[in-house]
Length: 328
Ligand code: HEC
Ligand code: HEC
Image 1 (cartoon, rainbow, N blue to C red):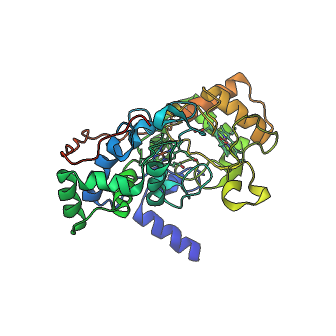
Image 2: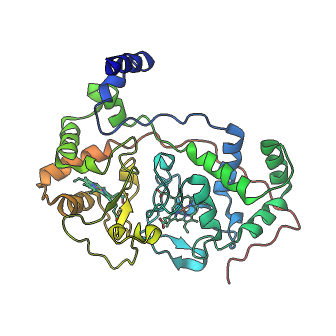
Image 3: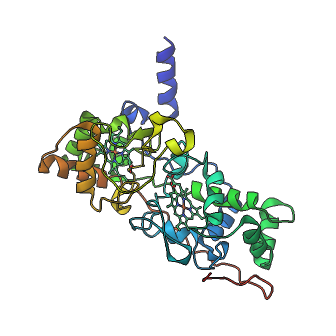
């Protein structure tokens, strides 16, 4: 009885719910309840390399919004041309994840955004220096005051604004979403077959929810160990529990055709390779070339509308703005 009432209520709210309600992956919804003024400010900060010691590296350097929110490098390059320890995940749809980073060490986007600014291997600055740069720039002083209704810039406001901007980076309207919402013609027969394989083989046990990932931490190499020389230990670094060794946040598969190379070590350069590896080491399955091609075709149908906006014009530095230090 209760269930019936609930179902009726769902239908009343969203008539198309029934089409995808029983599916393990749900459509991406457009961003909701965004504080537009904060997001506009956050967009500027996201693109502003003056938040780095070198004055050269912005969030967009490693999460390039023209390249699926990633850098398409095996591992990122940070301050002073340092080779980063791990692959840069996409920022697209990251607001849908249970936690941030491969090991989930940041609870949310706001907490995450403070990390790279002060990370010596990334932007190599300090929060105090970053805010003092912003405080020297009259355009920012005014905009922070307008957005927050008070004087003063601190790291809390900076990370809050960046996180608000990142909430806008969702990618609805992929062909797969149109299909989930009832448009039978949105996918080809091969893509539908690929989705069926994806479900029936067990991929959805881990890659589920609106982002087709980001809902749980899972062992990399469940059935067969994953061979890598990357020293990352995954979730173990956060919990210290042996059971969490080599457990990583399941990455989103939204826009995955744009976010190569794959895995935390960036070892797989093609989706074909990533799908075969997953089948083998997570599920003990060897896909035929045809099955592999169908799954890859399905994955590519999850590329949605990419963020589109006018490039932000950043307020110019002033005479007293601390100068960038690109070289140590
Ligand atoms: C030098 C390259 C680099 C820069 C600059 C950088 N990031 Fe990252 N970012 C990374 C890497 C690498 C990771 C993964 C680190 C990890 O999981 O240990 C990451 C992780 C993230 C994540 C988590 C995504 C997920 O799915 O877990 C978000 C969100 C993010 N960065 C946003 C930002 C923001 C905002 C900025 C600017 C303040 C920024 N990044 C600057 C390389 C970079
Ligand atoms: C037991 C959980 C689990 C299952 C089952 C699983 N995956 Fe994964 N998948 C993960 C985890 C965890 C990662 C990230 C691992 C890493 O990089 O260390 C991942 C990574 C990926 C990636 C790379 C994404 C990126 O951005 O790096 C692809 C593609 C992928 N999986 C596809 C699949 C497909 C296709 C299947 C079914 C054949 C599948 N997965 C089954 C947990 C799983």
